Amino acid sequence: MNLMEKICHHIDERKNRWRTEYYRTLFGVKNLDLYHPVFIGNPGNMKLGENVAINAFVHIWANAPVEIGDNTMIASHVQITTSTHDYSVHPMRSKRIDLPVKIGSNVWIGSGAIIFPGVTIGDDSVIGAGALVNKDIPSGSIAYGLPAQVVSKVPR
Image (cartoon, rainbow, N blue to C red; front, side, top):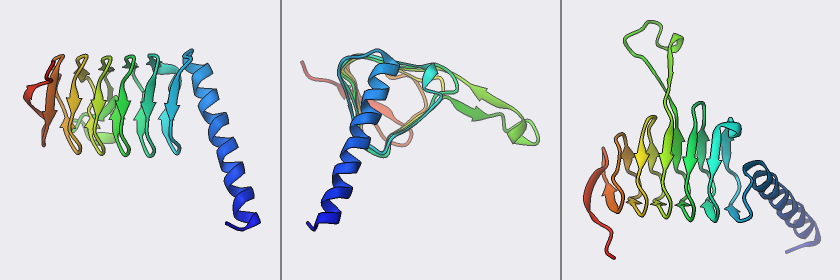
């Protein structure tokens, strides 16, 4: 690594530490693992538990409340949205529907999963990579697929 690359790398690391510290303060948590880049729209609508990990390229649109519990891990490229549109109204863009999303504690959401508006994911659950979660997932469940279906319980 040449000197310029070292300088750029150092600057990027400082920016990432600053961003993570900003979100820790904003959410009032002591422990937050944030791997940039991450997009959080309307972070004032979010409630984050302790020891949450959010990986790179995660997008969270919090037009309605989003709650994420303690010790939850969100893998890269996950999308969480609280907004949709009413396709029976024309133009569709004219009516947005905002519904809260609640993700419990000790949940693992795999890469590329999409969490739809109005969904609750119970504590101790696993959402498989690439899943489309458009309905509630009970606590202790393993769910994956298009749309996500509960396929088993998390072993104890």
